[in-house]
Amino acid sequence: MRSIWRTLFSGFDGILFGAIMCLTIFGLVTMYSPVEDNIYFNRQIIWVFLAVVVFFLAIIPNYRFLRTGNIIFYSYLFIILLLILVLFFGEMTLGARQRFDFGFFSLQVSDPAKLILIALLAKYFAKRHELISDFKHILVSGFYVLVVFGLILIQPDFGSAMIIFAIWFGMVLVAGIRFRHVAVVFLLGMVALGGMWQFVFQEYQKERIMTFVDPLSDIQGSGYNAYQSTVTVGSGQILGKGIGYGTQSKFLYLPEYETDFIFAAFAEEWGLVGVVVLFTLFGVVFWRLLYHATMGVSNFEKLFATGVVIMLLAHFFVHVGINIGVLPVTGTTVPFLSYGGSHLIIEFLAIAMVLGMRGHINYQRLAKNQTSGPLNFD
Image (tube, rainbow, N blue to C red; front, side, top):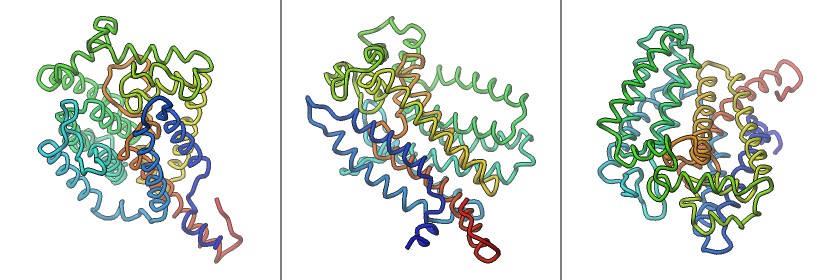
């Protein structure tokens, strides 16, 4: 039985899994309220259970087929189709169509789109690693991303669109872009931003950005969420108000504290000490994923794991930046903490895939050692 476990789960990382489970539990505890119905808390327990099941199932397969077959490209085309369909048939929430409502659960298409793009870019750059300095590869990869970016932006979902851009830009840098090309990309980005301001951004998005420049200009209007979030973070002080005793969040002065502002709610109840622990746990997650990236058997595995780090890191910094008032409010979740099934399952799945890729390297080493020498469980 022990040998079967080692064979199927040889890539399992107890430190990494323990860190993401601690973060998930922190999210659950922050959602719990002693003064109102715990609808989000109860539903999130189900999502956590499903995410853990997905994790242990997804760590088993050999993902070599991702870098040798066409399944990634077909998945990319399928996600494009879903992004188009959601614009017409998606659930309308706060003026945006971002998800399909199936009654018992909702699917936010941008969540799997991020993981599929990571796999697509990892395969593209891995095959062209020696020629990556050629600017045309930046343009081609940028086109793949631009299609997804544009479809998400017009939902409108500015936060997810920015995460998509961060994934592409980060993976381009890791793949070996030249510095002069970085300048060109930034120039194109500034031109695109100007165009989006004129023709793409909704009025409420412009208001959020202007509120970012001057947060106190409209506290009762577009700046309300940002102001309440900073107040909530600061009210936690050193030790926090205690679990379940966050007055700003539990009495709903801070809206959407289970999702977009869960870091602020956490900081209020746990204080600076809790925030340090939270940051440490995220640091462990990034450290372990980067370690597994360096151990990849090919450039695909290395780039895929790095892409997962970039995705989680972008979500983390954007969410925290929004909550402490240094970034405009865009409605972005923080990995493992925020309420929601789509993003949670994708995050667990992404990490399981990284470990699954590493696990089959270990399994191959194990098989080799069984025929040529003593066992070595690296």
